[in-house]
Length: 141
Image (tube, rainbow, N blue to C red; front, side):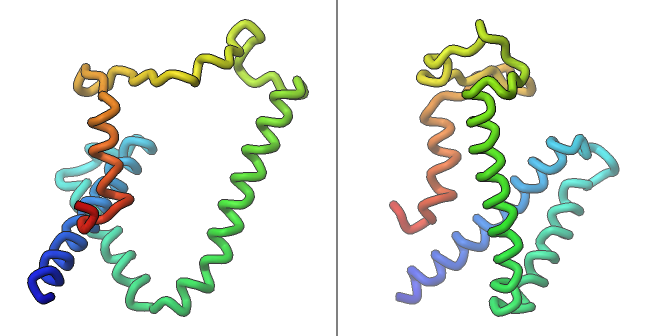
């Protein structure tokens, strides 16, 4: 059992650091915060890890109290999505699409756009390889 425990600990630790780096890269890309200073990605990742460590140190009791706030945010997002779909379907809100651009079949087949950084389009398997470990864990095989 000890060998599996050590591997699980190492895998979880490395996965956690990779999730933090991915989150920092997403934040930098989304808010255009890249290349502010040397080692900015590493500095932001270190700050995020300190924040996460602080949350863990506080304890689950206080984290669960904050869960109601996050649940409220998720529920407001879901309600906004449903309201937007309903308003768009009834014609009360036109959005940015005109009537000729509304085609049901547009979202029935995948379209993997070309990445502007690499010039390559991802495949379904490459996206699955990126997503699968994050939802299954290291023990899934």
